[in-house]
Image 1: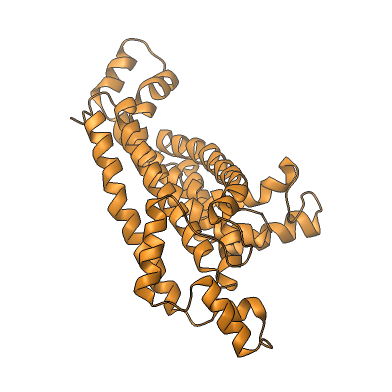
Image 2: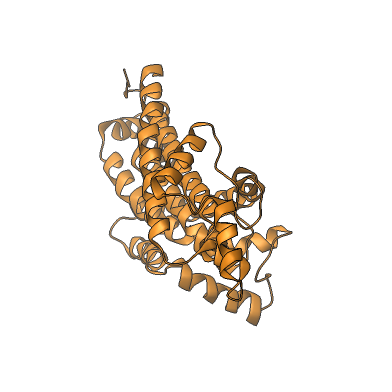
Length: 306
């Protein structure tokens, strides 16, 4: 297990370096001058040139890239053009809000998906199964950039039950969490149903029933746990999609997280901040996938890593 973990950790280095290189290259191909964006269209050429020199934008791209990679090796993500503060500090200030939203979305998704998947598997082929899968199909068919405004119009504007934007109480979290978790719930529900149907055919479930165990207990104590391995895999892979989805969701509901910070940095041509936000999302994606691999051993003791 230790050797497996170390090997996976070492493999993250070229992955993150590749992400950093790609982001750096694409950012510098995007039209726009950060110095001009900071000073405004009416700024003189001398002022723009002076600011470009101070920000290091006048140096050749290979030199800028070398400085960027050297900073990453030291754990330095650079200084934000817009705020004039370390990028790591700006991300750290907004990270708790993004983690709060992502965790709430995952909780919403699991709470919706598990009952739908289990009910669909137990009543396979019936009207109940079709209703459960129809609900999940609706969830996966509605993108968050459409679902978010619809929920805001219905529950915030028309009914006035929930706030439409901002933070402060749990009520502010409901609409963004449901918007972000709906698509994930749909995927998890269908995967839970398919995996549980396969496990219910196994002999150990029939043996448990033959020993006098009730059907509900046999499903919950035996079949459901073993059916969670593909579900956990999908959940881990979708965590990256959840973090990516926060970019749109946080913008819709004015949620002060890393996703909204990334959009603001892109609009302002804040190269260090954009690179830092994307690297953070990539690192989180890699770490979550590592944790998913390690969770296999806990869910199924038959799995060995060595």
